[in-house]
Amino acid sequence: MKNMKNWLVELNAAVLSTEAMNNIIMLANQLKPEKIHFLHIARQVELPSELESEFPDLQQVELKSVSEKIQDKVGLQLPKETKCIVTTKIGNSLRNYSIRLKKKIQM
Image (cartoon, rainbow, N blue to C red; front, side, top):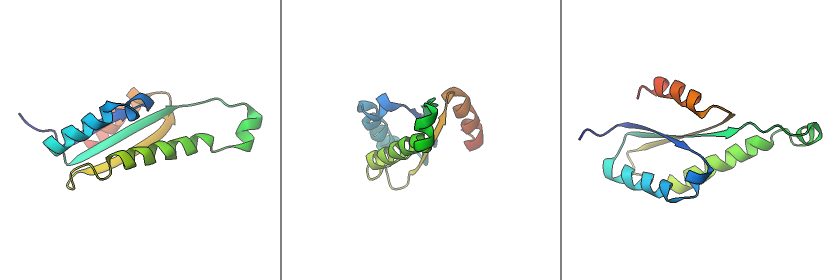
């Protein structure tokens, strides 16, 4: 069986808090990919204007937290030779973004 060198793993909140992440790590340790690109797209939230003016970067804080959570979870558990990339974005179309990303990293 031919091993894939580059993996694209689309994440949501459920995947971050379940056995799925452990399974990804286990597979990575067995198959040793060159690169794993974790992608999380948070849904755009429409906030009331007074809340948005008081906390303009509220969703950016969420994205940073998710990115740190992914890094913490996989950091020391992946093979040393596997490069880990984490991308977090705000939007509504995980499918559209992942198609563009796949083309960019030539999967």
